[in-house]
Image 1: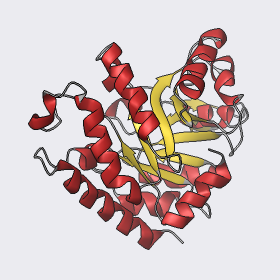
Image 2 (image 1 turned 45 degrees about the vertical axis):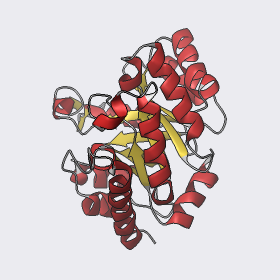
Image 3 (image 1 turned 135 degrees about the horizontal axis):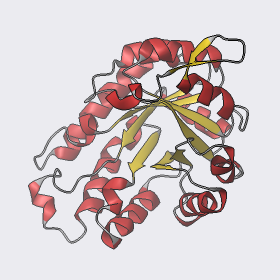
Image 4 (image 1 turned 180 degrees about the vertical axis):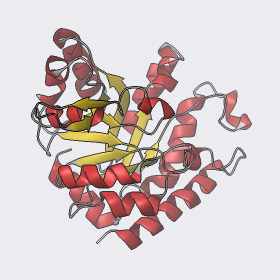
Length: 272
């Protein structure tokens, strides 16, 4: 999905919600757990109930890889079931030497046909280049994440060439932005850091940001929207647990729908 198509979805639906399918088989409703294809059945019900209230789905691959071949099969079924109108993200956080990254890119862009994949930039340009070379695909680079451990490295203060101070994540984003464009490069910026998000938006007015941390992690949708929205929408706000685990009963899909609808309704107030 290219930028124009993504922006069109956001404008037509007047929301920028990304539903995270971080499906943990130990947390899905009890009545589904004995099903031979429990994860996909759960995901299918969530997608059916939320697709009218979101523009994107994000699959955290760890929850599927941990199940071995059955997990990969459920992942493939889920990706194929998501409507073509919705932006599909593989939250895989890959990144390795060039020839290995080329295989990761082939996995998620060709074998599983995701629109985007999250990557870790630590190993430099050659580890990201294979992802960026795909037409109408997106590389989502970890910028400033929402977890507590972001302070360990991302928020370290470093000196620039002219003896100014900046955070390590600022240096990383500055460098990475030279390798791609706003048409194929996004950044992850956590919802728990709205003040920094506002500054990052000033620096990168045209880029899309994937914003996790709203809902279960305590991020404020209002603050994130005020800090991150641009003329194209410019942000995809991810909510996972708050939506997919809204209920553990047989009415779980209906409850997920209500939460997604609530997010979408609030977003409609913020987006122009």
